[in-house]
Amino acid sequence: MPEDGDHMKFRSGLLLGTAFLAGLAVGPGALRLAGSGDFPGAAFAREISHDNSAETVRLLTLLGTVMDVVKAEYVHPVSDKDLINNALDGMVGNLDPHSSYMTAAQFHDMQTEISGKFGGLGLQVQGESGHVRVVSPIDGTPAARAGIQPGDFITMVDHKSIDDLTLDQAVRKMRGDPGTKISLTVVRPKTGKTLTFDMTREIVHVQIVKSALYGSTGYIRLTEFDDDLEGAMHAAFDKLKAEAAKTPGGKLTGIILDLRSNPGGKLDQAIAVADDFIKDGEIVSIRGRHAENNQRWDAKGTDITNGLPIVVLTNGGSASASEIVAGALKDHHRAIILGEKTFGKGSVQTLIPIGDQGAVRLTTARYYTPSGRSIQGLGITPDIPVSETKDDDSYGYREADLSHILTNIGGNRTTETPRTDIPPIAKSIPKMPDANWPAFDATKPATDFQLQQAIKVVNAMAGISNPAPATAPATEVKTTAPAAPKPSEAHH
Image 1 (cartoon, rainbow, N blue to C red):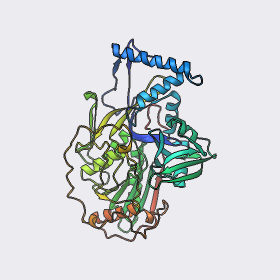
Image 2 (cartoon, one colour):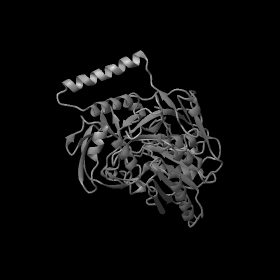
Image 3 (cartoon, rainbow, N blue to C red):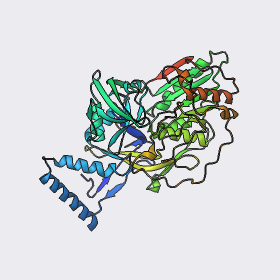
Image 4 (cartoon, rainbow, N blue to C red):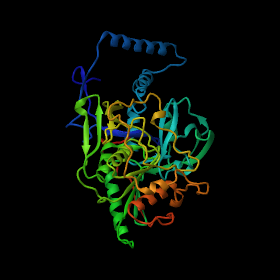
């Protein structure tokens, strides 16, 4: 119901993410929440007046007429609540792939999931043309262990088709009590094969930071941009420095930042992570419909690595918040980007609670890298392209493949200038593994082709001769998700 007579006041915060957590998670992205402190101005509030023009009244009358027809003639009775929720889904959901209306129950589920611990399978999923598509499995979860891959279409749950279900309905079928069995059938577009995976649901603990030491090179993997991610990453970096001090060289000589299959999360965390590696200059800017809400964030003068060489690993599952970090480090020539082109989600969503009736997740801005470029629908091109496998069957599902995506407008439209600071070793880095390269095994770093090439590059940048492929980290540091965020904070 409207407040203050004919007006409603919205308080907003921003997301950078794409999908749903379905014990699970829905979509990659960058998000700001209602009441979040990083939104422009003391409060993001706008008075929304109702449009009472004759055309609007005519269209609203049409909506009511159609509702009356459906209620009177549909094959079985249907409630006003279901009809209106369907209308709201279409009204918001058809704007772009990342805007959506959430009922109170869906909003509650989202707030539960972002606590960093939830029951389910550990999948990021996205609705696409009425189907459910995997954005990314979460590290260490039943879905990741089973072998479900980015880009897979989920067609059946427990051998029953989900084609006639909404995304939310499909997600609810995949959720369940920990310890219960579930079977997912998927179609893998890369091969055309239909595959069935039998799994057991479990409490999913989102491990947001993983760290390891390979020789004198520190490896830090960020799985998603949850609350307090930067703090966890900083702690992992400090532990790596302490471990490196015990090695023959006595110090870290380089950093690999792994953003592969990281679907995004909180905008403020993306800014904080980039700020840890860039001493000065712009990190990112956002521009929306209302000029007063445009904003730019600059680095605060501290590089926690004191200038160590950095290689950033990316793939098609690196989205939104991940792309902000990769784009900032690339534009400032602070890091070499190695891997595959990123997802290409250059929009920011605002989560707007609607009283106790749910919430609207609405695209409210595009973001731009320090060079002024929008990566919307384009992604970030790696400086050194390296595929995951010899079959070149990497993540083939990106923003540009979605229906009714946001257009790429504004910003710097000139041709990107090739970098002149790429290390000479780049010329000898193969674009994909040869036929004898072993199959990838997440527990065996020596099978991770992109990681091994990154180690070569960062060692060359540090002036260190490259050893044989790392078969195991010298040490490993793991940081799990923080405690549940406050109710006003969220990221998916």
